[in-house]
Image (cartoon, rainbow, N blue to C red; front, top):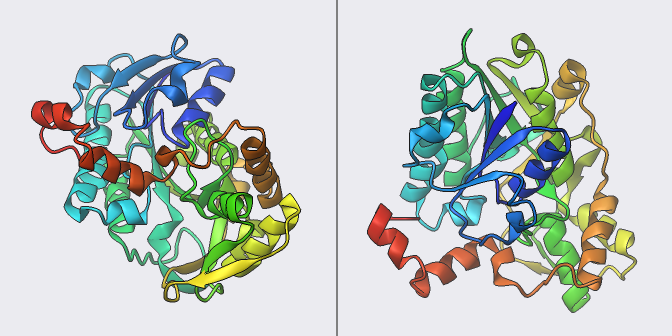
Length: 338
C-alpha cells in the first residue's frame, strides 16, 4: 500500500513514517521542510520526499496513492495565533483541499490528524459524542477541517478523524513546546519548571509512538468500521492535572520537584474518554508519562537532543524564519507562506 503523509517530516510525522516503513508500506512525505531535512535525512533513500504545501501542491502527487494521513498544520495554539487567518488557510482550507483532491484522484482512505483541543473547557469526562468547544484559532480550524473531511466520506472514500491527546516523547523533529517535553527540559536546564496557574487544569496525554500507531490501526481496520468516524486517541489513565503531571515528570527523572508559577489560570481544561477507540479497534497505548519523561531526559543527557536548538520551539522558529527573511524565496514563488 502506498501512503502519503502530509507533514511527514514533523514531530509526529517523522515518527509515523518510520513505523510505516517498518511495516512494509511505501511512503510519500509531503512537507514544507521549514525545520530542515534532518528529521527524515536517514530515511530519505527509502521514501519519496515532496517539498510542498497542502494549499498548492500539484494534485498529481496523489496519483497511485492508496491512503492519505493528513498531519500538515501549524502545530499548536501559540503558533495558530501568530496569524489567525493563515492558520485557517493552512489548517482548515489546506487540509480540506487535501481531502477533496484525495477523493477526486481515487484515493480510498483518508485520516485527519485533529486534536482533543476542540473540546476546550468542559467539566466531567467527555467523549466523541460530546459537544465541542474550540477556544483558539488552532482548535477552531481543526473542528472545521473535521467537518470538511467527514462530509466527503462515502462508499468510495473512507474518511476518519483522530482527535489526539497532547503528545509527548522523543521525535526526530523534536518539540519542547509540548507540556511533558517542556517540563523535562526545564528540569534538565534549570532544575525547576514554570507551571501555568493554577495547575488544576486537566489534559489528556499520549506518547508520539502510540498516536502514530493509532493512524496505522485505522489504516489497517475494516473501512466499514472507521468510515465517517471520530476517535479520541490516548488512554484514560493519562488524563492528568498539570500540577500533578509536573510531579510525575520530576519523579520519573529523579530530580527534586521545584517550580515557579506563571501567567493567568489556563482556560483550557478537559478530561477525555478513550473507550471508543479501545472498544472499536482494540487499540491501547504502550507508553506511560514516566516512560516518555525518562526517554527525553536520557536523550538530553546523552546529547541526542539539543535543548538549545531554536527549531524545537515552533513559534520561535517561525518568527526566526520570518525575521531573518530566510523564506524570501518561497514568498516570491508561492505567495504568503505563513
